[in-house]
Image 1 (tube, rainbow, N blue to C red):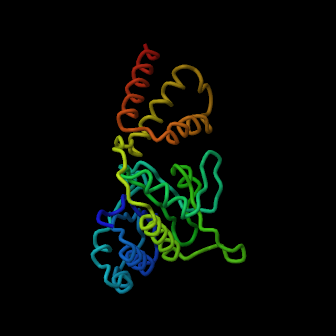
Image 2: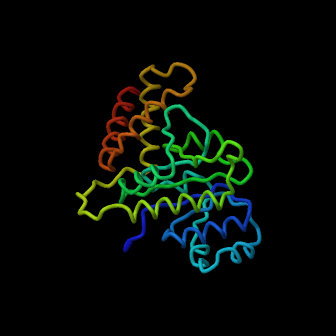
Length: 238
C-alpha cells in the first residue's frame, strides 16, 4: 500500500507502558502510524520503548490528548471497541469495521480502546458513532489491550490488501466529529426553543442526531445544517 490508511488508533486512559509499546509495534507491523493517547496514567516510558521493537518512531509520534473529543475532532467515523450493546449504535466485527473504514476513505476513522481494567465507560460508548467487538469465546471474552489492537490493525491491513484496485469516484470531504457535535448542539437549541424539550433531555437529541451521523454528511452539508439550525434558533429567541 503506497498511502497510509486514514485510521487513528485511540487509547483511552492507558495504564500499562508495556501495552502502549506493544500497540506501537502492532501498528508498525501493519502499516499504521496515526494514534492518540488520551488522559494517559503512564509514568516511565522505558518499558514502552522496550516493547516497541523497531517501532520507536511510532511510539514517539503518539498524540497526547486530554479528552476523547480532542482526539477524534477531525475524524468522520468514531468506533468504540466494547462488547456492550447501546441502542442506536451498530455493533460490527473487526472485518466489517475494516471494510467500512476503507469504503469511507479518505475520511478518517478513529478506533477507540478503553483502559485495561474497565474498558470504555457508558459515556465513552455513547460518545462513539458505532461500536465493535472481537467475537471471543464466552469462557474468556476479555482480551489484553495490545492483543485487541493488534487484531484490529491486522483486519485493516487484510481488508486493504484484499480490496481490488479501482479508480474510486471523488468523494466530498466528510463532516468531522467536531462539526457533527456542533450540529447536535444547534439541534438541541432549536428543540428546546421550540418547546419539544420541555423537561429533561434524556436521549431525544442524541437519537435524532444519530440519524444525521448515519447519513455520513459531507462538511458542506454539516455546515448547511449548522447555519439553518442557528437561524431557526435565532428566530425562536426573538
